[in-house]
Image (cartoon, rainbow, N blue to C red; front, side):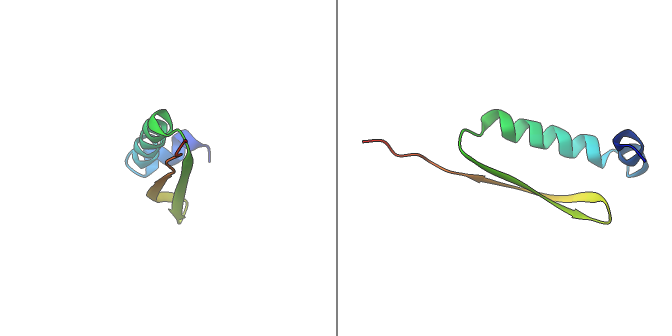
Length: 55
C-alpha cells in the first residue's frame, strides 16, 4: 500500500500530518520533529525547538 492509499483509507490523516510536518519544518531553525505512529497511522507530532544563544 502506498502513502496515498493509506491517507485516503484513514480519512485524510496522512495529508494532514504531512502538512503539519511541512509547516513545522518551515518555521524550525534548530530542533527536532518526532512522529508517533500506531498501527501505521501518525498519531502525534512533537516539535522540539532549540534556541541558540550568541555572545
